[in-house]
Image 1 (cartoon, rainbow, N blue to C red):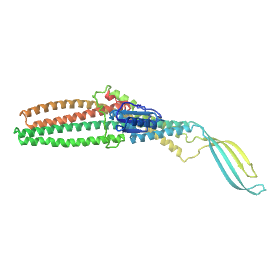
Image 2 (tube, rainbow, N blue to C red):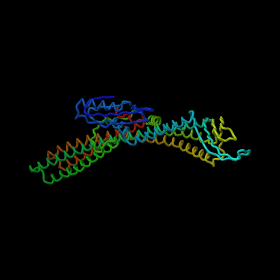
Image 3 (cartoon, rainbow, N blue to C red):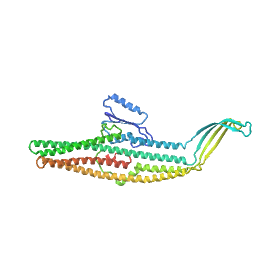
Image 4 (cartoon, rainbow, N blue to C red):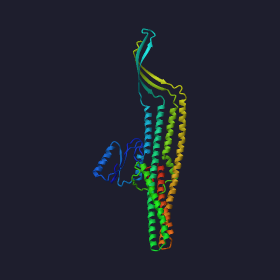
Length: 475
């Protein structure tokens, strides 16, 4: 899919197999994210050739291609790129593919199987009724063996592998949710740190203006030298705060670039989708119910119980006989016996004594099943605790947003009046500096609370919905 126009191209291709997630991508296999390509220095004919080459390279795979007019990444773009390029996501995909292979291997045990064995040898033998009294002869035996499935053990193995696959799929979804949460947190943290850097820059500009005004008034003889020295203090303080805020913003950008699989120092432009924060339109009880139903961790634990139940059933059949049908062709140069003998026989193998291995396997499977059942309850409790904490955090964050916004408004009014009073000789400079510092703190607190609330709302909605790309918090 191609959309938009401009100077940067993002092209992805995905091979589909298995279940599909909300992006339309396969939860089993994801490959190939081509990073942002700067095409501003190419002619449009070259750009067309680049697009043709991109499409031709993935002609055998479904294609998801996005052309961004500005090159700025939205939160959805960031999460999508993280899930497709981050090593942690790729490693989880490998584990899922291993589980799929295990299912195919278990299913193959139920299919028709045929094996061939050939044994050739030379024998020396004494003859009971000579002549001859002794002979040396060669023989060759060819055997075709067809195993016969007796009992439900093979079906139990398939059920075990299928349950493990379901658990792996849920675990993969859980790892995606966790990784998307990291990406979202890094996204909001970058926006916050950049806004805080802007705020500290404005605070520094204000302090420099205060110092400039103080110097001018001192030169005019309106205020003493002490006021100029006092005005220099917030300049130095705000300069240090600004440098630290810049460093924090650079670190936040490196963190997000790392999640995206990009060079740490690469420039990164993102779209601010914070929006106005609103209270959830569902109660905490609804949140708990929906989170339990959507929880990947709970689904993984339940699927593991099913897998372990099948594993226990299979383990209990350690004493089942092994039955096979054999066709044997024996050819020999023994002059005292048959030169050729064809045999069709059924072979039955009964385990008599395995040294306690079978019972130990059953005990181990039973303990694994009991542990899996306990982990279901643990997953449920963890989900309830997580969603309840997220819900409460959202409510408190929204209250904090309102409080800090009000505090910033009051601090702004206080500073404006104090500044006006200082200019008219009603207040000393120290009062203006105090009001300026209070305003700077209020502005920083307002910025932090806004992005913290947006991050908290994202965590809540992704937990409730069970998938990271439902951006209900911005609707």
